[in-house]
Length: 400
Image (cartoon, rainbow, N blue to C red):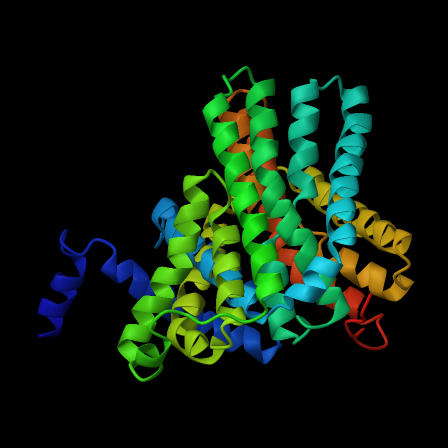
């Protein structure tokens, strides 16, 4: 019987079944070990990906499939965050979020330009790498804020505001890189993205003024758990599909859907319906990051890669901290906010791939970029933990 089961699991009709079993057992086994030393789940998932990936055992090598499934986890994460945030606080803090993010991007590009000037880099490469290091990881930061119960603090709200603006800026960044690489920019796409951005802003303003809304069929949904699951799933990914249609981030659409749910005051059953799916898909996202880490390439370039990782942590941390100080945020809180946003984000993989495909960066530079992004994601929880230890207490959200 066991032989028949083994054959069933490894048949061509179930090519991915055994790999998902291996991933599940890997997360459990590695999770038990790392939780003994109180490591966050982010580290558990990434290390699981490294161990199961091509660099170590090679048991899981379908990175494209795992990455695509993992992207659903990012969408679900933003949906949950949308249900938890305070829309009035988010809107009242827009000056810090928008101005701070724009300054961060400009300073990042300027820093890369100084380096590129001496290395004779092209302007396209300078802008690409500046954009890459200016984006922080929505998945890592929000996951850590959730685990540390800091989402409702002032630091958490400031971090969330900057992350959302960064998500919006991804679209113009991709347009700029496409233009610099010589690709044709279609006017229809720009118009469509502009319409999408206006609709999102309009939706947020409407929710803010409306205060509280009623979802359709809310009485029927309240007593039917199975229909709740499909309604919540459809609402989350429906909004994500709409923003995707307009050429914007799907995660941004899910965030707006979460705010709609929050305005209806029915977040409890939405949370219970989709939480297990969020855990699974978000874990797959971080595992896909681990699968990208090439230990042999890192070992062959260990000095350069770890130098870049250290410089990026310090530079990004300092840039964000100084920007926060410009808005009169206390030094300890500013430095901690900088630590939260100091890693390079998951959307930087997209920018790196775009630059590589268009010939802006070479294969070697692309491998360096992938390695540095992956390692900043891996070491980010350690950096944040050390920086957080310098804080005396959590700063509450204060009215403007």
